[in-house]
Amino acid sequence: MPSTRPTVVLVHGGCSDASTWFGVVAELHRRGLTVLAVANPLRGLAHDAAYLADVVAGIDGPVVLVGHSYGGAVITEAGAAPNVLALVYVAAYLPDVGENYCALARRFAPSPLISRLRHTEFTAGGTERATELSVPADCFRPLVAADLDAELAQVLAAIQRPVADRVLIDAPTVAAWRAKPSWALVTGADRALPPAVQRFTAERAGATVLELRDASHSVAVSRPTAVAELIHDAGKADRVQSADLPIEETAPDGH
Image (cartoon, rainbow, N blue to C red):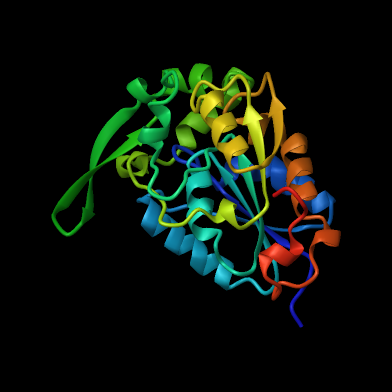
């Protein structure tokens, strides 16, 4: 018989890796939740979402999907899986069908990070060449992790995983937030992903929004308790009746 207690699946964003969820995982474990922090391939939205969908399909029971930054686009595409109970966006954006990051960003003041990203060529397959993006070490703390101490920000800069530049123009083919209840944590002091983009897309989706005014883009590291509390709220057991029920039957009013 499938478990009715949700598994939390954490999806990191670009220029990051699963280790950034360390504190959040610990907090969720203290709350008795099963957690999986996946290694997002960061090779393109279709590829990354297909990988995540396979991970979700292998989980017996309901799932709460959590995406940070670009991970928000990935859970938007993969979150249509029938056992996904809820979506949680952490310093992330919630794109609509056919809408990529660049199209969204043009509506608002640009992020100071975009022009500072390092571009490096890599072999995408066979002889095909592509470009990936990373954050220069001297930009990492001021633009990505301003609420972390310098030593920890330096470590995060060193272990970051570059992301294929195509993720900025890739667009989802489905917007799971249209059918699934959503929560969003907006980082008010974010210099990597503009808070205005986060707010606009979260409000458009009818998400339950928590804003931390002084939080940077690295909120999962700097404020793991707040992040875990939001995830816990999204996956409370009284919302989970059966992983086999349509999501409309388990969603709270207003989402």
